[in-house]
Length: 223
Image (cartoon, rainbow, N blue to C red; front, top):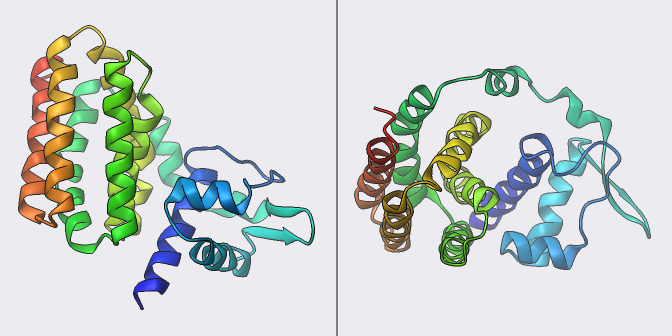
């Protein structure tokens, strides 16, 4: 049962790469098994099972000797929330959305997330800290960190909201470049979220996420 849940989660991750992150388009070939399993922190066996799930829904196609490709079927995915995400929203509204959803997402991730999903969150958190310390752009890994938390909730609607939350995260990264306090808070807050998730402390993870977002609202002057 746990393995089945993990393979479904990995299938959701791959689908998010296609429909939300737009990393792959119709006709594109997915990375090879070794690369993709390493990126998703799962075994190749689990990855194969996840791919089989997407093949069963005709979202992916395996071409013998060539690889795995994205089919036209992905274009039939519901577009409503993706269209909503394209609406220009101000930072205050976006951060209010984060405050409503993300603390609860952290709570559910601590309760429902698989060990592989928790590890993925921790790995992204460490990468973000390294990028901050080295002055590198962390936007993509910030998206991945928060998306990984949303996926670990195993709540499909939470995943659908991610394109909207990406806007808030991207705005926050840009604005935080002007504030050393925000950058320092991000490191400390992420560590706190990660520690509670690793301990499977749901209330701790929820409160840490709330503190993280409230820190950003205060320091970025978007109250």
